[in-house]
Amino acid sequence: MCPRNRARRVTSAPWAGTSCPMTRPFADPTLTHPVLLPDGTPHLGTVFLKPALSHPRITVGDYTYASAHVPPADWAAHLAPYLYDFSPEALHIGKFCQFADGVQFITASANHRYDGFSSFPFAIFGGGDMAGRPSMPGPGPDTVIGHDVWIGQGARILPGARIGSGVIVGAGAVVSGQVPDYAIVSGNPARVLRMRFDPDTIAALLEIAWWDWPMDRILDNEAAICGGDLAALRRKATE
Image 1 (cartoon, rainbow, N blue to C red):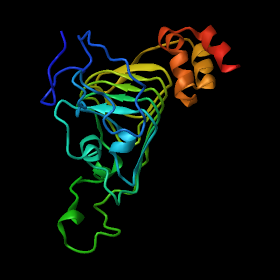
Image 2 (tube, one colour):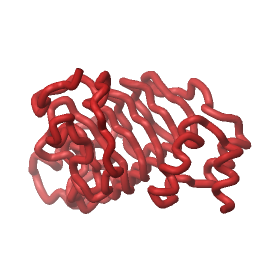
Image 3 (tube, helix red, strand yellow):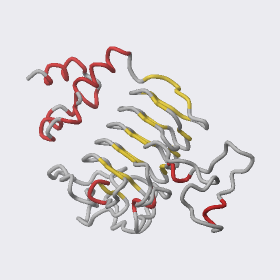
Image 4 (spheres, rainbow, N blue to C red):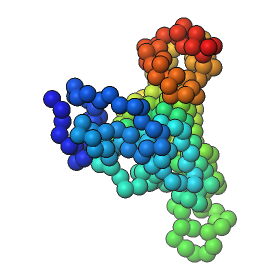
């Protein structure tokens, strides 16, 4: 049975559990709202981030999307609330990533200095010029997310994390440091539960880099990409 207009709050993916015909061209990466409900209206809780964001410290690849049960007015502030226009650090996100509701990137501008006797940021509240104040930490590192990364509901990505391509982050995880390509991580602090594939397969996938292919070519090879047919992908990569 087709769901009715669900521009109101939704609690699951808009396409889940419906047998409605959804045949249409693949969404253009410049669309802010790429998912249509069965009545033809856009699902406001899912956006392609590249067109949805206008932030000087965030770069996002094509087709990366985020979802929210309650669509925010400002997706940049929703995803990276401590990343300001004047922040020295940046957030770099690859192509085809998938971010569930509640995912947040806690970037380096959220940090306090903690190597002394107090972490209190006195400079923020006055008492002189902020520049060079001893209570303020120095600039922190960028946060980098690879391609085709799935981050589950409510996960937190901490300052300076570097998450490789093909990584899956479990719901509620708190991730820091470097996560290798095609790892599955979960927990607080997040730890590698297992690798999705063996080292040779991972190396081959990174070399093939299907996410850089034209969309028509990706769709022609959807079965191989989603079904794990490395031999087929290798053949297509050499054509």
